[in-house]
Image (cartoon, rainbow, N blue to C red; front, side, top):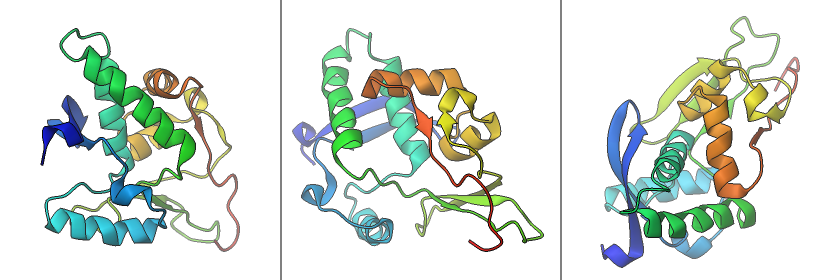
Length: 183
């Protein structure tokens, strides 16, 4: 891979490890739109061929947080000033899809914990059981356990600061607001 086709983001905390992550400078598959299941298939093939693939939400957050934390580092400033608008444009103009899926449980289930599935249908899939259903709202008002399950980060003020820096707006969580008998 040519270095001019990706950015290198160091010190990204992902899955309790400090990693260096490569972020493609262009959208996957030339920006083609797909369903999440379509991106699952695409990513399985891409991983087999050591190519860029669709991340899960914690990896997107790890990239965003590392860029945010390095925004004033004189060695990384120029690169970060390229990454931020790329992330902003991606969030605003495209159906931003990750490989994180939330499987809500109906209220008549004996087990009411929802499932947050990261890297859905990938070899490194992780499932977290947590009640996610609830009112929409500013990220700073969301239960820390919900944030931890989705972002692998439970600091609502910091999460909001990161995405406010990227997008220029406060961060909100939209979710199923109440449980039905069947979902």
